Length: 325
Image 1 (tube, rainbow, N blue to C red):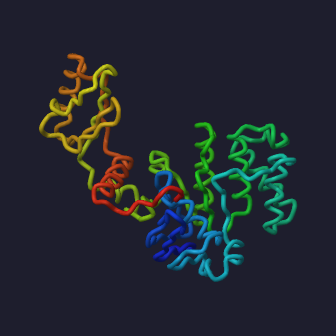
Image 2: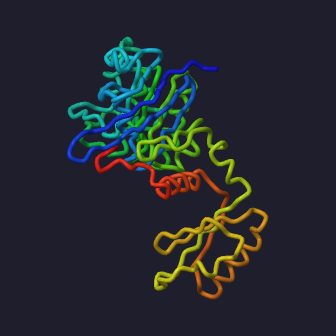
């Protein structure tokens, strides 16, 4: 078993005030060296609050956090030397170029100038940023700025690398290049905590997942673990004509389950063995004008996530008030 670089043990955090916010509620989370762990949750789930506690910027009300064996609560300064963090907001580098900013972080983290420059050049090339390497920061796009922030984090990575929404503003082509570099960080021995609300992204980019909702861990495991209960099922999605307000629920076949609707899009779960019948039913609905179009796909992590969040809402699980992040 690889060594753990992060242990979050029973951590809780409430922000006091006129409307108290229970941002984290008895959270357990681990990250091992060489693995990418996705922390998945909607906006307001408590992800950034947890990251701030790991980085020693906020103290938990209870519980323990250890980074590479060091106590993040008792000695946050020491722990900050063991981690690299790409924050949700880009680091202001006004007056610098991307190359200078990346090299500067490398020098701050203690490597010789030549090594910092070589590492910066390697990242600029891998992320296809070389043409902007000497461009003043205020003249680069949001995507280039975001990739520069990642490179500043990765130039001399700590034992634990925390990436908070690293793909924001990044175009699809460079997003793939970025995932390659994130994977390389883990392959080189770092533990990576990837914070995201993008379910589809997380499904293809991580080794393990922790789903956080309303400050509470709802599920954890590999993508295969989390989707196991939905194997053997398909998701049937239909788009309703925009002029129709009524639900097509009364027309669904009796073998579908978990019917839901959002706006003019409805979705249902279909047993895989009845996929041909479902396609025939959906095509008939298109032919008769009941629906505009349909798709049928294997169940995904997104389906698991939506189900978990919906189940939490149905059971009345505690929800943090406004302001929890």
